Image 1 (cartoon, rainbow, N blue to C red):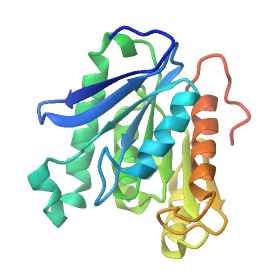
Image 2 (image 1 turned 120 degrees about the vertical axis):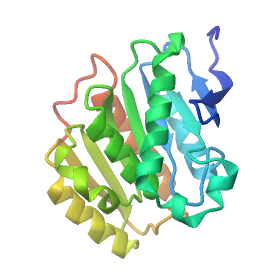
Image 3 (image 1 turned 180 degrees about the horizontal axis):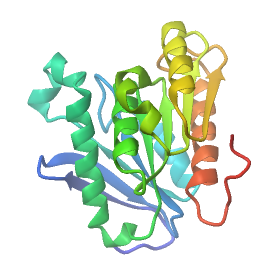
Image 4 (image 1 turned 180 degrees about the vertical axis):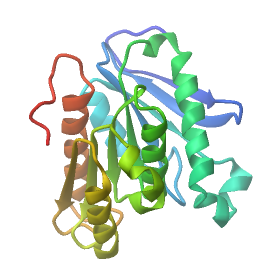
Length: 223
């Protein structure tokens, strides 16, 4: 892939499961963020696409991919199969390692809903490869068995009106032993559809990833 003054976008076929995806690499990228979507979503999710564009403006490459095949996505049990979703994240991480244009970039995971649990499992499994995690409206409780083993800096973002999920994230925050923070977006529900709330998510995510991924930017101030 040749890079010029504009971001380079290319379709991707991820891993042995041949999962469809899209890789966007801006000029002189400082990091790579892999999106791990949740139940009922995919690489074409308008929310994740929007956040990805914000991160690209911050010079971060982004990879959005479908964690499930079309047949699997119709099976509700597989949608909540965190072990399977985590395996697909592993496939994506292995695929990234083989891409010359991504060589040397530190990797962050942006998880949403059930995808956040898969991202945290991947962070616990690959503590060297995964350097930061951001969860948007996530279900970290579904990764409860591995939270104490996550050493990757983790940001949990939840809407103030997403009350049940907010309590689950507060419990997860206590279980995490890494650099961590919980950000509550005022007035936001689970999908962050209220005006300005998704913008808040994107800026919080960009700040976290800049602090913990971009070389030379430092992360000591992030608590």
